[in-house]
Image (cartoon, rainbow, N blue to C red; front, side, top):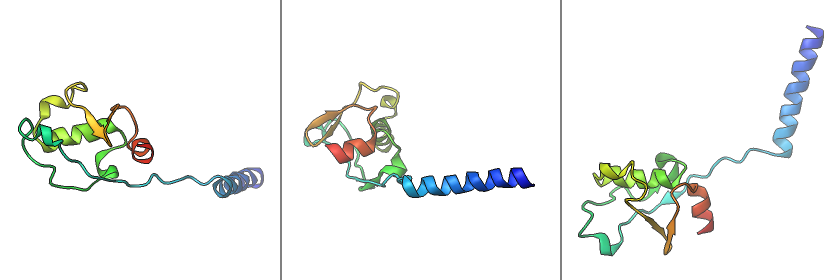
Length: 107
């Protein structure tokens, strides 16, 4: 296996060098504190009892956060409706297609 072995060895070495020069960053696992706005207590029953939630357990997008809230609060009719619930983070309404990581780091 002269030429094939050399090609495999070179591919392996190149992969190792690339990993050293530009290592892949593992996506951090963010702790998310999910709370209802006080003004919504009488409209939305239930509690987000598993605080803090981890971003890995919920999913990569803010839409996944909204859907988790809907499931945990038994509001299943809003899972497919992206306009039925707004997410407020640090006083700002957040678009549902944003990555959780970006919102966590920038808001």
